[in-house]
Length: 243
Image (cartoon, rainbow, N blue to C red; front, side, top):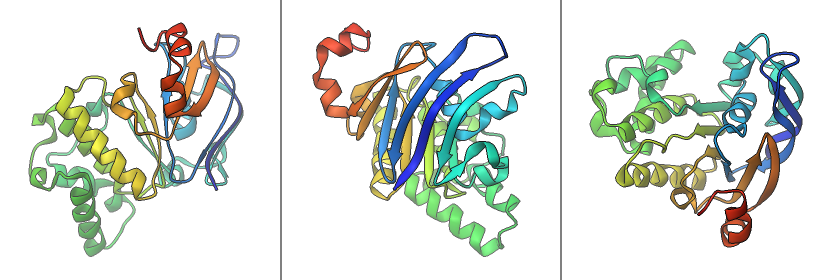
């Protein structure tokens, strides 16, 4: 089953402006992890915004084509409903963190769904254990390391239990230990059935992913098995993803 289907997707941030995405087509199956890579400015974050629905906040934007998540067109869904289908973790976790403790941060979304208190506690405990940050329950998110902040932001998104997760360059500012910790959680989530789309420059950190989508100047130029593309060093060097 296709968890995400992108069909003829094009996007401009304003009518008559440059096309940031140009007729993108690809599908992600349920339980698959796909990495999106390409040079800065190629449209990776815009693609994430189109799938998660965040680009809809830009009333001047022009989006063509379709993005279908779990059989539902994202442009026909309200933000609250879409958040139950797609969870997005941004490159800067401080954009998503605002509560005084990690526990409060994770509980915020289910509280807004008006879930019973016992269900909220169950979700918070489950997500803390899943992401491996139970020891940070009472910590102030703003006093954590970069890797820990990303894990808290991911945990907060997971509190809604969305079947599709999008992570936009969450490892870009992490050290080797932080990358390893986030990678371990992503493997666990993928193995648990989550569909994951990750934008990442450090392809070694996500070499365990299933497939790799390469963007260049707003167009999808390759979409293949991760190991196949990593082995094609001539191609990867030509598009400057490796030296």
